[in-house]
Image 1 (cartoon, one colour):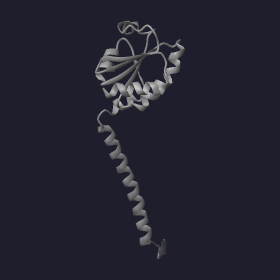
Image 2 (tube, rainbow, N blue to C red):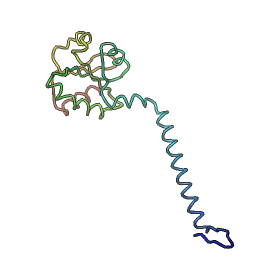
Image 3 (cartoon, one colour):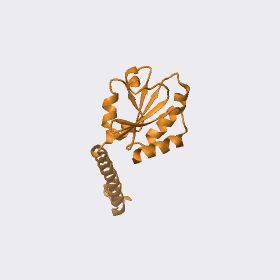
Image 4 (cartoon, rainbow, N blue to C red):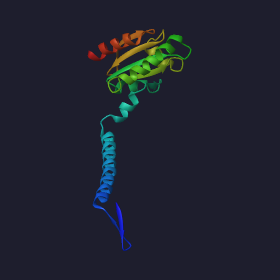
Length: 159
């Protein structure tokens, strides 16, 4: 409480302690926030984790560069006019979030990128190819339920 005596304002010890605590809480919160941000900046692969939470857009020009730098990658070969591709697209998005940091997902539009599509002999879409350290090791043709894809991915990353 404040007390005024002879035009001098006195603040009780209780009030001063309260102000110090508020200031300390504010200072502590700033320190916590700064330490958390420093932690995130120093975290190994932070940018990679952000990128992995949604499928990468792959093209003929960047396909091999991206596939080679990831330990595990699943690439969805698709086209905008393909009905089954539109069915599987949200499933691939969900899996990309669920496996973020462990498996990278990518999408390659076969109409816009015929070179890579031809190199892998993609004749039916959707086709999902599984890459391990840059090498195609497995694949799935056609749309399938999320749980079936998850079991294929689990088998793929456990090898």
